[in-house]
Length: 266
Ligand SMILES: *C/C=C(C)/C=C/C=C(C)/C=C/C1=C(C)CCCC1(C)C
Image 1: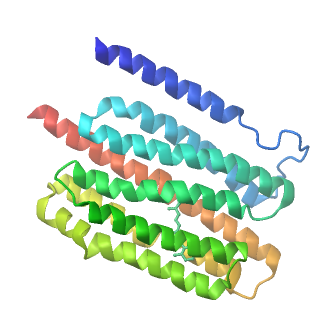
Image 2: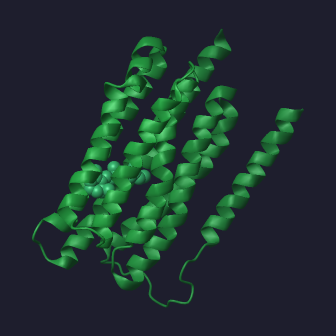
Protein backbone atom coordinates (compact mmCIF):
# COMPACT_ATOMS: atom_id res chain seq x y z
CA UNK A 1 0.00 0.00 0.00
CA UNK A 2 2.69 2.41 1.03
CA UNK A 3 4.65 1.66 -2.12
CA UNK A 4 1.65 2.39 -4.30
CA UNK A 5 0.99 5.71 -2.61
CA UNK A 6 4.64 6.75 -2.85
CA UNK A 7 4.68 5.81 -6.50
CA UNK A 8 1.75 8.12 -7.16
CA UNK A 9 3.48 10.94 -5.31
CA UNK A 10 6.69 10.39 -7.25
CA UNK A 11 4.81 10.56 -10.54
CA UNK A 12 2.97 13.71 -9.52
CA UNK A 13 6.18 15.33 -8.33
CA UNK A 14 8.03 14.46 -11.52
CA UNK A 15 5.24 15.79 -13.72
CA UNK A 16 5.03 19.01 -11.70
CA UNK A 17 8.76 19.49 -11.95
CA UNK A 18 8.83 18.98 -15.68
CA UNK A 19 5.93 21.43 -16.07
CA UNK A 20 7.84 24.00 -14.10
CA UNK A 21 10.97 23.39 -16.12
CA UNK A 22 9.34 23.75 -19.49
CA UNK A 23 7.60 26.95 -18.44
CA UNK A 24 10.91 28.50 -17.45
CA UNK A 25 11.66 31.32 -19.80
CA UNK A 26 14.68 33.22 -18.68
CA UNK A 27 14.34 36.18 -20.98
CA UNK A 28 10.62 36.35 -21.63
CA UNK A 29 10.87 39.99 -22.61
CA UNK A 30 13.40 39.47 -25.35
CA UNK A 31 11.89 39.28 -28.83
CA UNK A 32 14.89 37.54 -30.34
CA UNK A 33 14.18 34.06 -31.62
CA UNK A 34 16.35 31.20 -32.73
CA UNK A 35 17.73 31.53 -36.27
CA UNK A 36 17.83 28.44 -38.47
CA UNK A 37 21.53 28.97 -39.19
CA UNK A 38 22.50 29.34 -35.54
CA UNK A 39 23.79 25.82 -34.99
CA UNK A 40 25.21 26.54 -31.57
CA UNK A 41 21.79 27.89 -30.54
CA UNK A 42 20.11 24.79 -31.95
CA UNK A 43 22.45 22.59 -29.91
CA UNK A 44 21.51 24.55 -26.75
CA UNK A 45 17.81 23.94 -27.50
CA UNK A 46 18.12 20.25 -28.30
CA UNK A 47 20.25 19.49 -25.28
CA UNK A 48 18.04 21.42 -22.90
CA UNK A 49 15.07 19.27 -24.00
CA UNK A 50 17.08 16.04 -23.83
CA UNK A 51 18.05 16.96 -20.27
CA UNK A 52 14.39 17.47 -19.30
CA UNK A 53 13.46 14.07 -20.76
CA UNK A 54 16.39 12.37 -19.03
CA UNK A 55 15.36 13.91 -15.70
CA UNK A 56 11.83 12.51 -15.93
CA UNK A 57 13.22 9.13 -16.94
CA UNK A 58 15.76 8.81 -14.12
CA UNK A 59 13.28 9.91 -11.47
CA UNK A 60 10.53 7.58 -12.65
CA UNK A 61 12.90 4.65 -13.01
CA UNK A 62 13.84 4.83 -9.32
CA UNK A 63 10.66 2.77 -8.83
CA UNK A 64 12.15 -0.15 -10.69
CA UNK A 65 15.31 -0.63 -8.66
CA UNK A 66 16.12 -1.89 -5.16
CA UNK A 67 16.57 0.55 -2.30
CA UNK A 68 20.35 0.88 -2.34
CA UNK A 69 20.34 1.85 -6.02
CA UNK A 70 17.61 4.45 -5.71
CA UNK A 71 19.97 7.12 -4.39
CA UNK A 72 22.35 6.76 -7.33
CA UNK A 73 19.51 7.10 -9.83
CA UNK A 74 18.07 10.08 -7.97
CA UNK A 75 21.44 11.80 -8.12
CA UNK A 76 21.59 11.16 -11.89
CA UNK A 77 18.21 12.86 -12.18
CA UNK A 78 19.40 15.81 -10.07
CA UNK A 79 22.39 16.28 -12.35
CA UNK A 80 20.21 16.48 -15.46
CA UNK A 81 17.63 18.64 -13.64
CA UNK A 82 20.17 21.24 -12.51
CA UNK A 83 21.76 21.21 -15.97
CA UNK A 84 18.39 21.56 -17.77
CA UNK A 85 17.59 24.64 -15.75
CA UNK A 86 20.93 26.24 -16.54
CA UNK A 87 20.61 25.33 -20.21
CA UNK A 88 17.44 27.43 -20.45
CA UNK A 89 19.41 30.44 -19.29
CA UNK A 90 22.52 29.69 -21.31
CA UNK A 91 20.44 29.13 -24.41
CA UNK A 92 18.76 32.51 -24.06
CA UNK A 93 22.03 34.33 -23.46
CA UNK A 94 23.47 32.71 -26.56
CA UNK A 95 20.44 33.26 -28.81
CA UNK A 96 19.94 36.86 -27.70
CA UNK A 97 23.57 38.03 -27.57
CA UNK A 98 25.78 35.43 -29.28
CA UNK A 99 28.15 35.53 -26.31
CA UNK A 100 29.45 32.71 -24.13
CA UNK A 101 27.33 32.21 -20.98
CA UNK A 102 30.37 31.57 -18.78
CA UNK A 103 28.79 32.38 -15.41
CA UNK A 104 25.77 30.10 -15.88
CA UNK A 105 28.00 27.34 -17.26
CA UNK A 106 30.27 27.38 -14.22
CA UNK A 107 27.45 27.66 -11.69
CA UNK A 108 26.01 24.56 -13.33
CA UNK A 109 29.37 22.74 -13.20
CA UNK A 110 29.91 23.74 -9.55
CA UNK A 111 26.78 21.76 -8.68
CA UNK A 112 26.68 18.96 -11.25
CA UNK A 113 30.36 17.92 -11.25
CA UNK A 114 30.50 17.32 -7.46
CA UNK A 115 27.24 15.35 -7.83
CA UNK A 116 28.84 13.20 -10.53
CA UNK A 117 31.80 12.60 -8.22
CA UNK A 118 29.40 11.60 -5.46
CA UNK A 119 28.16 8.86 -7.80
CA UNK A 120 31.52 7.07 -7.51
CA UNK A 121 31.27 7.24 -3.77
CA UNK A 122 27.64 6.04 -3.86
CA UNK A 123 28.13 3.03 -6.10
CA UNK A 124 31.02 1.88 -3.90
CA UNK A 125 28.99 2.59 -0.77
CA UNK A 126 26.21 0.35 -2.12
CA UNK A 127 28.63 -2.57 -1.73
CA UNK A 128 30.90 -1.69 1.20
CA UNK A 129 31.90 0.96 3.74
CA UNK A 130 33.99 3.58 1.97
CA UNK A 131 36.42 5.86 3.89
CA UNK A 132 35.50 9.57 3.87
CA UNK A 133 38.95 10.42 2.47
CA UNK A 134 37.84 9.11 -0.92
CA UNK A 135 34.97 11.60 -0.94
CA UNK A 136 37.14 14.55 0.10
CA UNK A 137 39.89 13.84 -2.40
CA UNK A 138 37.34 13.70 -5.23
CA UNK A 139 35.85 17.02 -4.02
CA UNK A 140 39.22 18.78 -3.72
CA UNK A 141 40.21 17.71 -7.23
CA UNK A 142 36.86 18.91 -8.57
CA UNK A 143 36.99 22.36 -7.03
CA UNK A 144 40.62 23.01 -7.98
CA UNK A 145 39.73 22.06 -11.56
CA UNK A 146 36.59 24.21 -11.73
CA UNK A 147 37.74 27.31 -9.86
CA UNK A 148 40.92 27.56 -11.93
CA UNK A 149 38.91 27.02 -15.14
CA UNK A 150 36.48 29.77 -14.19
CA UNK A 151 39.25 32.22 -13.33
CA UNK A 152 40.77 31.61 -16.75
CA UNK A 153 37.52 31.92 -18.70
CA UNK A 154 36.16 34.91 -16.79
CA UNK A 155 39.42 36.84 -17.05
CA UNK A 156 40.49 36.79 -13.39
CA UNK A 157 43.65 34.96 -14.34
CA UNK A 158 45.73 34.44 -17.47
CA UNK A 159 44.29 31.62 -19.60
CA UNK A 160 47.42 29.40 -19.70
CA UNK A 161 48.25 29.18 -15.95
CA UNK A 162 44.53 28.65 -15.23
CA UNK A 163 44.51 25.81 -17.76
CA UNK A 164 47.53 24.13 -16.15
CA UNK A 165 46.16 24.33 -12.59
CA UNK A 166 42.78 23.06 -13.76
CA UNK A 167 44.43 20.14 -15.58
CA UNK A 168 46.25 19.23 -12.35
CA UNK A 169 42.91 19.01 -10.50
CA UNK A 170 41.48 16.74 -13.17
CA UNK A 171 44.55 14.48 -13.17
CA UNK A 172 44.29 14.19 -9.38
CA UNK A 173 40.69 12.91 -9.77
CA UNK A 174 41.78 10.40 -12.40
CA UNK A 175 44.55 9.19 -10.12
CA UNK A 176 42.09 8.63 -7.26
CA UNK A 177 39.65 6.54 -9.31
CA UNK A 178 42.35 4.47 -11.04
CA UNK A 179 45.30 4.07 -8.66
CA UNK A 180 43.93 5.52 -5.42
CA UNK A 181 41.66 4.08 -2.73
CA UNK A 182 38.47 4.33 -4.80
CA UNK A 183 40.03 2.24 -7.56
CA UNK A 184 41.33 -0.34 -5.07
CA UNK A 185 37.98 -0.75 -3.30
CA UNK A 186 36.35 -1.37 -6.65
CA UNK A 187 38.95 -3.91 -7.76
CA UNK A 188 38.99 -5.80 -4.44
CA UNK A 189 35.38 -5.79 -3.28
CA UNK A 190 32.87 -4.96 -6.00
CA UNK A 191 30.79 -7.65 -7.75
CA UNK A 192 31.36 -8.02 -11.50
CA UNK A 193 28.39 -5.85 -12.56
CA UNK A 194 29.44 -2.96 -10.34
CA UNK A 195 33.08 -3.28 -11.41
CA UNK A 196 32.22 -2.94 -15.06
CA UNK A 197 29.99 0.08 -14.39
CA UNK A 198 32.74 1.67 -12.29
CA UNK A 199 35.22 1.09 -15.11
CA UNK A 200 32.90 2.64 -17.68
CA UNK A 201 32.22 5.62 -15.40
CA UNK A 202 35.90 6.28 -14.89
CA UNK A 203 36.56 5.94 -18.62
CA UNK A 204 33.97 8.71 -19.04
CA UNK A 205 35.91 10.86 -16.56
CA UNK A 206 39.00 10.42 -18.75
CA UNK A 207 37.65 10.43 -22.30
CA UNK A 208 34.30 12.20 -21.94
CA UNK A 209 35.72 14.87 -19.66
CA UNK A 210 38.73 15.37 -21.94
CA UNK A 211 36.33 17.08 -24.35
CA UNK A 212 36.10 20.11 -21.98
CA UNK A 213 39.82 20.99 -21.88
CA UNK A 214 39.81 20.51 -25.66
CA UNK A 215 36.95 23.03 -25.86
CA UNK A 216 38.84 25.43 -23.59
CA UNK A 217 41.93 24.99 -25.74
CA UNK A 218 40.05 25.66 -28.98
CA UNK A 219 38.15 28.54 -27.40
CA UNK A 220 41.00 30.41 -25.71
CA UNK A 221 44.40 29.03 -26.56
CA UNK A 222 44.42 28.92 -30.33
CA UNK A 223 44.83 32.08 -32.33
CA UNK A 224 41.53 31.91 -34.28
CA UNK A 225 39.12 34.86 -34.27
CA UNK A 226 36.92 35.52 -31.21
CA UNK A 227 33.64 34.71 -32.99
CA UNK A 228 34.52 31.28 -34.33
CA UNK A 229 36.32 30.51 -31.06
CA UNK A 230 33.23 31.10 -28.97
CA UNK A 231 31.08 29.04 -31.35
CA UNK A 232 33.58 26.22 -31.11
CA UNK A 233 33.81 26.48 -27.33
CA UNK A 234 30.05 26.33 -26.80
CA UNK A 235 29.28 23.57 -29.23
CA UNK A 236 32.08 21.41 -27.79
CA UNK A 237 30.96 22.00 -24.18
CA UNK A 238 27.35 21.23 -25.18
CA UNK A 239 28.19 17.94 -26.84
CA UNK A 240 30.39 16.98 -23.91
CA UNK A 241 27.43 17.47 -21.57
CA UNK A 242 25.36 14.91 -23.48
CA UNK A 243 27.98 12.23 -22.89
CA UNK A 244 28.89 13.23 -19.37
CA UNK A 245 25.50 13.97 -17.90
CA UNK A 246 22.95 11.89 -19.82
CA UNK A 247 25.34 9.10 -20.87
CA UNK A 248 26.81 8.81 -17.39
CA UNK A 249 23.29 8.57 -15.91
CA UNK A 250 22.34 5.86 -18.40
CA UNK A 251 25.32 3.75 -17.29
CA UNK A 252 24.20 4.04 -13.69
CA UNK A 253 20.65 3.18 -14.71
CA UNK A 254 21.88 0.06 -16.54
CA UNK A 255 23.83 -1.29 -13.59
CA UNK A 256 21.09 -0.34 -11.11
CA UNK A 257 18.46 -2.24 -13.10
CA UNK A 258 20.60 -5.31 -13.75
CA UNK A 259 21.87 -5.57 -10.15
CA UNK A 260 18.30 -5.10 -8.86
CA UNK A 261 16.98 -7.85 -11.12
CA UNK A 262 19.74 -10.17 -9.95
CA UNK A 263 18.81 -9.67 -6.33
CA UNK A 264 15.13 -10.25 -7.19
CA UNK A 265 15.93 -13.64 -8.72
CA UNK A 266 17.86 -14.83 -5.65
C1 LIG B 1 28.41 18.17 -16.46
C2 LIG B 1 29.61 18.88 -16.55
C3 LIG B 1 30.86 18.34 -16.48
C4 LIG B 1 31.08 16.88 -16.31
C5 LIG B 1 31.95 19.25 -16.61
C6 LIG B 1 33.24 18.92 -16.53
C7 LIG B 1 34.24 19.89 -16.74
C8 LIG B 1 35.59 19.65 -16.86
C9 LIG B 1 36.15 18.28 -16.73
C10 LIG B 1 36.44 20.78 -17.13
C11 LIG B 1 37.77 20.73 -17.19
C12 LIG B 1 38.70 21.81 -17.52
C13 LIG B 1 40.05 21.46 -17.61
C14 LIG B 1 40.55 20.10 -17.25
C15 LIG B 1 41.11 22.43 -18.04
C16 LIG B 1 40.54 23.66 -18.70
C17 LIG B 1 39.42 24.23 -17.94
C18 LIG B 1 38.25 23.25 -17.77
C19 LIG B 1 37.47 23.76 -16.56
C20 LIG B 1 37.37 23.34 -19.01
